[in-house]
Length: 185
Image (cartoon, rainbow, N blue to C red):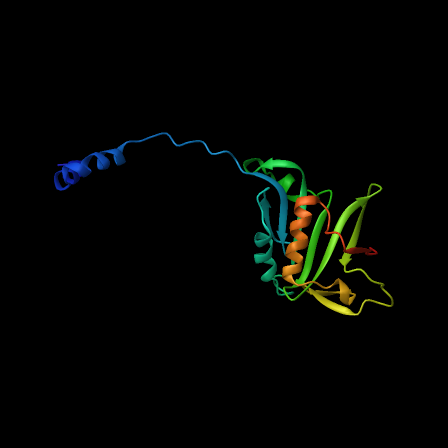
């Protein structure tokens, strides 16, 4: 007696039709490939590709895990064109994007940097609340093995950074009300 005959012999007649239905094979439906629009890089190591359905919560979780030393940064770069997840190559994975937003530090104290092209040249900026910047930056934010020096109103929490990342993800720009200070290379 084979397994199916054995199961049928022990199964009441009203359930036998559903058991035989389990044995049938049907072709699997072809799923549409996920389209990715951005690359997210964690602490210059792990790269993840994300698509159009991201939410603030998706950005908040990794930002809350930043400790400033082992997990110290999250960088989000817009891909030059949307790409099916199955078509991502090493060239796409490592190509610099036209613009990016990055936060560095720990969940309690993060610096947000924006990189964008201005008149065809790549430039970096630190985002902050409006205000004057006088004197030298005096707040030290851990950056893996080094420290970044910024002004007090250029320090954000993970929750604030998640909102900025979500806005940047949707609009390619930081939220209105923040100001940018160019970082000298």
